[in-house]
Amino acid sequence: MKITLDIAKVLLEAAERKAKELGLADDIAIVDDGANLIAFHRMDTARIAGIDIAQNKAWTSVAMKMPTSNLAQAALPGNPLFGVNTTNHGKIVILGGGIPLIMDGRIIGGIGVSGGTSVQDIEVANAAIHAFENLRDRRDSENISYRIGSNQRVLY
Image 1 (cartoon, rainbow, N blue to C red):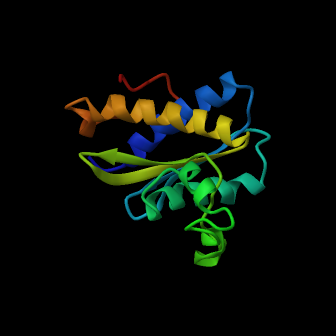
Image 2 (cartoon, rainbow, N blue to C red):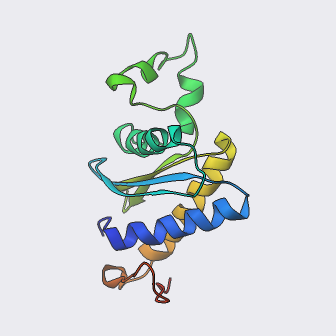
C-alpha cells in the first residue's frame, strides 16, 4: 500500500473528527514515504503557525523514523540528540504529534498534527493511525474512494 490522496483524506477525516471531539482547531498534514506532502487540512480558526509545524512534524516522523514525541527527551541538554531540532534548517520538530505510518515494518508515510498540547496532538494523530490500521488490514484498501462535498464515505 502507498499513501494515496484518497487514503490521506480518510486519515484527515479521522483526525478532524477527534480534534472536534476534543474541542480543538488543528492543522493536519499527511506525507508519503519520502516525506512529501500528500494532503493538508487546516480546520477553521486553526493557528497559521501550525501549518508549518504540522507539516514539519509529519516530515520529521518519516525523516527520523519515529514519532516526534520520542525526540523530546533525547533532545534535552546532555542527551544524545541534543540540538537535533536545530538541524535540517530547523525542520526537525521535537514536539509530540508526528507519527510515521508503518506497513510490514516499513515506513510508508507520516502524519503531523498541530493545534493543541503535545498530548492532544498525539491523541488526534493516533485517531488517524487507528483509521490507517483499519485500512491497512483491509485487502481491498487499494480501491478506496472518497469524495469531498458528497455523502459518499469510505467503509473501513
